[in-house]
Image 1 (cartoon, rainbow, N blue to C red):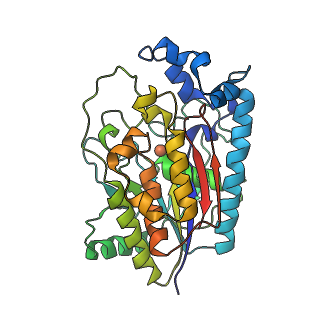
Image 2 (image 1 turned 120 degrees about the vertical axis):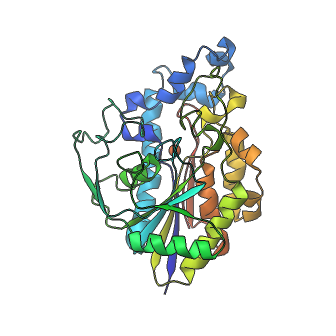
Length: 352
Ligand SMILES: [Fe+2]
């Protein structure tokens, strides 16, 4: 009989690196000529940011941030180990990795065959780790064998199409030789201790970046870059309903499945109203409260404008998870909110 575990984590790329590079996204913005000097002036920053910046440009804060994130990852990993799923569905954004000029689906199920991933050799155009040391000191050609739940992926795509969701799917990568960093980092971070990732994965990529997926190549751009927007991402409601449908399908099936949402919440570099310097922490706190209380309606009814204005494009991955948890009537049994201004994004971890 089916059993479902819900997990939410972050895939913040600098977590793969060393503390010296943890605030790189913030430093990029400090160097952006389009951001007014007054916004870059520490005198005008929130207290929490000044505190993180400290006297050492965030070095001590980087270590604290890392240990808080690690704690959440370890709890989530233990829950997955205890549950021992047949496979893991991982919802993650594709940031101009396979979603490129030649095709951008709203969602895609990756029904790949088993692969040997090379996280550092394949970092170009994906994880922001090119030319940077990784935290584990792994060699450039470090290999990570990963099993894919390709039969289950085909079945899920079929079932979703029968449920009126017109699913895209892929049997092999179109551009990036490995997998999108949202999926890869989820595994690298959950298995932080490198004890081995034992479960087949069913990656479910989401076009979270919408208007910025091609124009901004799903990542950093200067404030004054005048980029032609792409069509939007799927709406929050669509992502939520998709997740609910997935749960409905899986709960009638034979498998033990972990559903994992892989994303930080508000991203400073996507938040135009703060000059892309600060994440919208207040928006995130309201969403977090709703998550703790099981207020699914609050999640499902956020407009796409609210999501993009708050720099929460990647929260659409969590929308799918929350849709699934709503269908199963689950509140988190454990959750944690790591607040930061210096390190780009709020990091939430949760176990349902
Ligand atoms: Fe991402």
